[in-house]
Length: 504
Image 1 (tube, rainbow, N blue to C red):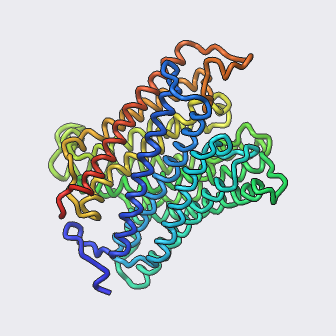
Image 2 (spheres, rainbow, N blue to C red):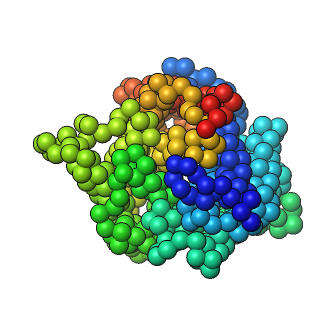
């Protein structure tokens, strides 16, 4: 059994080698998906920038579908699986419950991700139906089967993580309660189980419908079931992101939460209430009552918002207290000015918090309010919101922790450290401009997904937008170029480190 472990000379953790290999392969695959999704994002941004208007409609919808799946799905979830294995096995000095199950999960996820990309590329006329895959749009069976395989693989990986927690507790590989970071990963895993099961409930009947086995699949029913999967899938990311915030606060400045109970309570609020926010996708649908809409998007949703606000106080407080312990006590903000800004992990952490909280969080509360939702529904402001949360907050947090994963797990010294200092800023500023540009254009009624808002494909119902809307779309395009540059720089640094980084 001792041959299956090594001791990390930096952290002192007992590293289970089979778990380490799975962390590596999932993290590398995640970065590949990030690169693919970023290329698609650039093409889409340059199409929505009306001055450039790069792609024809069919190509636009093809690349938009691929962008959605690779960024919202494959990049995020492959990386989250790596985070779960790191939290469950490495941080608890435990063995992974079942390496064989881990490889089966990875194989299913890889086949599903590759199959989704291939089916969309090979037959965009049928399969370019966006991440939401709304009925009555009907794709080929291979498309739905690929997505289902990916979801099943992700579910198996979550079960493997939960089983690892049980083994760690049974074999007493750690003392006391779960570390806060592991508790956050557990929160993400619990949300993931219900989310992926609802995904199966939405997409398995859709697969049968596309095969002709089931004659109909009601569009309204599909939307209700789908959003029990579509929105909570992003809440998995939020829980994992915040767990990484706490980890980065500790790794960069030695910060620990002022109150473990306070932070754990905030994670508990996520489990109980955050999925309720799915209701804001259904506020214009007739399938649910007005009372249900108002309750879920007002009183109940605010408890999830409260959880995010609690973390938004706890993480910066942990950083400030740690900095003040080091003697940075002059004035209100010396602790911030003297922070390790040349550490890309720290700048990624701060940018993640700011972009998630202000551009993503505030816009989400506004757009999710029952009375205001109709103002933003199906406009470009909606993806502007989640480009602040997922594309901005989650992706920056994952980039930040990668700069520690490379030396600690891959045991390679980071290549291009001088470039790495600027990488989070380039990506962060770019994605902020993307989010602001989308939300500004949405305020002028620019539609969420349409490939051509100047003529609407030659429609007799074409509409002339206020000229200011085109300014916001230009901002989106410029931000897309910057964000792509930052993402590409991150990928190049990671790849160069794996290939040429000095072995540690």
